[in-house]
Length: 317
Image (cartoon, rainbow, N blue to C red; front, side, top):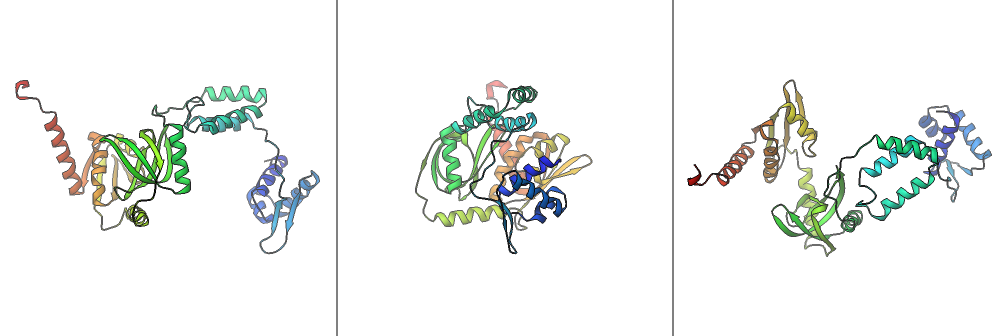
């Protein structure tokens, strides 16, 4: 890092709050004396650096001072634009006008040469997105509810049919273009994940009766995963099964690699076993369940029902 880059970095750090000379020296891997000279240089350039005395003192930039728009390099612009592209293209972004406006602002600050180099970089990168794009207004409402911790009623298209649920959104996530909200579900009194593209309508609602109790129960149940009183889930994985498990949000932290593939090992509440049974069935012969007995029994019963459902009629034999 040359001195110009270090001065810019110190200025950005001071705009983020008070920093001591020792903190800055550690951050930029230089001596404290060098930091003092750099702060003097910023003052000579017209930057109003304020020194604060005392045990919690240090340096900060005077209120009201802001950096002018930064000049982005082609690599920096590529990182920003590619990151935006991972959550949706400008035409169909679920983030709405904010997504489009930040793209316009980024393009406006790029000089022609940087823009040409950035376009060339982006042409060599590709984002694979799910085609199930959520409605921008629905996503905005879910995000607002997660930020404000307010209850919402949703009309949800689940695989088992349409349903209305009252939820308290906690976090919003996206992977591969598919958006989900993790929320307290008042019906199940547990934390559940809902695909946002399956939410047909969302509206503000009053909290359910005993809302605080429901939230406490749901969050304590989640923290109870791994408790020694819960049944242990254990299975062996083929090499392909390991790859599938590492891509699965609920399995990736429980994979243990072995010379012949891997193992899954974790504990969960008994009422969660049907969920994991469904997920193991998706793995096919790439997983062999060793425990728990309840999970193995559930999978066998489910597959028996499935076989009966698809059994040929007598006149088809």
